[in-house]
Length: 277
View (tube, rainbow, N blue to C red):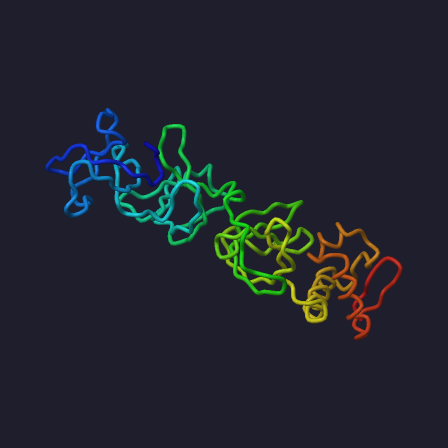
């Protein structure tokens, strides 16, 4: 019997409070399907598709209800309660699903919706995890270059970029050079498809085309200059790392923004600094 999965089992015994199921009639390992879950007219020997989980007393039990999440799947579940050792999620069964603190990638609160997978812990209990979702995301999205999509931030890859689950199921990423410091795990964003990789993963951007983005970037750079009391102690010749750290922009975006401000005569550029006029 496979915990956390759907499977077909035979009715081998009827009792007042339900039926017992097993893979074979002579199988000693049996699981209870409570009376209210037994299909009308079910008879001994009939096969029933059920989902196996553990009840509040840690006993294996079957249900004909379909939970929102099974092993090998991803789902967005609502946080019901956050306690001292973890959180409890609504997954559509009588028993709530436990999300341990060690399996969280961000702080969560009651009412939040989180993207999780199901796993079996060392005590053979079903639990949720916000970690290592990458391999379960699909790579057969219907999207193409320049499509606008909606996705959920589920991991920050730092050197690689920001990982996004488009439609909560398709694998996508925002490249590392794009500033995502204002985002948090669980945020739902709108982005444009930059391209589709040969394996089906999506490359995304939250930035508009360069000529549309330039005005916004120019104002951002102007704000940084003002934070430095009107004199930015570096120019567009600085390293990409310095520019990214101080402005949140890539070097190319910074150069375009500085060029816009210079043309508008709002700044002057010296050998080592940019000064507000």
